[in-house]
Image (tube, rainbow, N blue to C red; front, side, top):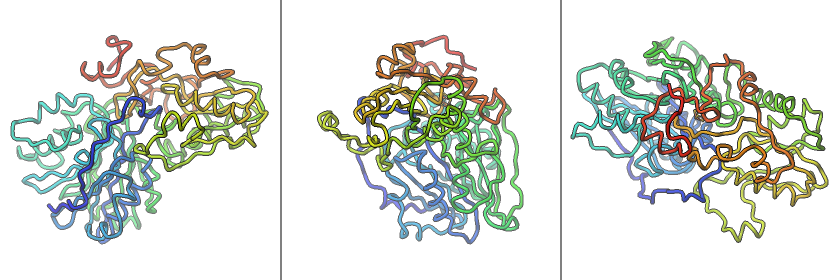
Length: 499
Ligand code: SF4
């Protein structure tokens, strides 16, 4: 195994102070893989990861398989910071596994960047993971045979060790991966590069998305797997299907069709927040773009919570399709009232309180020409702690808005996520602590309304039971270890519906 280690620099781990924590639900990771002989697979993976950059901005990595060797390059930063043409040119091969990371289990440092690459008696393999295990401590005890040298603090490395140990016990790749999956509980969409081909796996509930497609002519047998369909489109691959919940798929070079089998059967529970906010609006779920879904939930919101106003604006980017939908049904004109700076990453140096008071607005800037003298309806995708929403309302009033009516295109977030989304503890979630009236007062809005849970689910072109909605209702589809539960559930440490 060759490792391009010179690129891996020692850097201080990024630990966010409480005051610096983002006041949003934050995505966990993006995974991407391409199997295509005689193609520049590292470059293709680079573009795939670039399309998935919104899913994680802390680190990026690509592992390339070339005649039995694996070349790995990963580092902290955006895809465009970690890779350049020189690095990619030193990574020829026919199978690439790629990963963008946002830390959920394990802190933000380069040892926790992915893919994870391990050696076995059958050769090396590379694994990239989107999601979060809820039994990581149990899995660590299961794989820690006293000889394992953990190099990271991630649950993804534990999955890789479980596969490695199953191979060393004499199982083939397919059986070894199945055996390892039996030990895992939680959310996981995985791409795994091996000497016999590319495996793609989703957990039994399919909490995180994963799709696959063909690259080029079907007779080439070139395959691409991506967290979202936007990763296929950027390299011109044709969407074929979702990796189904509980499915293990093997793609082999030159093969016209993948080999597909269910390794477990459980009810579908796709994360509904993928639809509302996390995934890109041009990614397709249930046969349509999320832009269409988000527009529809805005229409539903207008029917459920009408208001008399002059203008509808959306909080960029995910609030905009819902704001357009709200405008279509309410008849209130839509306008761009907020301009977003897209280049603010998590490690961006935050302005001091004094600078903020002096008017520095790093992420969003309101347009007084549009807002002055108007009664505004502002549409956002969610409220987590409420601090950002409160600042937004102040900024809109300073820009001249005479009334501010806030409409949220999801129900109140009352429970934390354990399945790969970074949320605060429950006592930090504003809707878990306060009534609607109290939130209205705290945000200083003229009125506030949320989308109903029924409206959110019915707008999707899927069965109503298809989704995980636990952060809105506490109905967690996967039972969690007590130590995991107590890490985030401050208000109701027991009695959570699980299972
Ligand atoms: S708890 Fe919420 S954010 Fe987490 S998977 Fe379920 S719906 Fe998604």
